[in-house]
Length: 192
Image 1 (cartoon, rainbow, N blue to C red):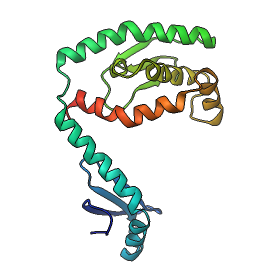
Image 2 (spheres, one colour):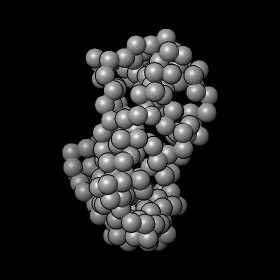
Image 3 (cartoon, helix red, strand yellow):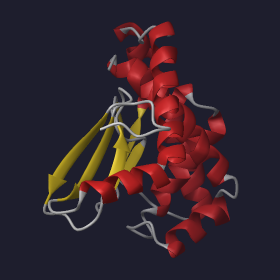
């Protein structure tokens, strides 16, 4: 299917779902998920209404692909060095913020993760991506505060974010940095 205003190929996947959604894959292709019996003209109308937003995301993906092609992947030695630096730096920052917030945690693990910057288990274990050392220091701190706040609230509720902003008022700017730049860092690590 082709829609004026969208430069990418569009694939339609029908299923028993009740709603329609559009996703721009890493290669720039647009995937539309639609209900089985939804008329094609409604899919076309949906895409026409959303064409500016979809095309913006297509161009962003294509720019990321060009940037990745011009940027070499991290070597195994570089990844190992990042992990060593993260194992030194992140626990110190976690200890600092945990003390500031009056929180206790169990174990800290540093990983080479492909999809996450951090996570917190219900047992109080904290996991962080070694690539955080490649981000600005305040971005790393924002992820640490985010995960520590999960020790208080195990969800992403308003109460959770109230806690995050109390400790880290600049959280949104740092989160935006990760959204804008994080994918390229992860792709440099994975080579994908």
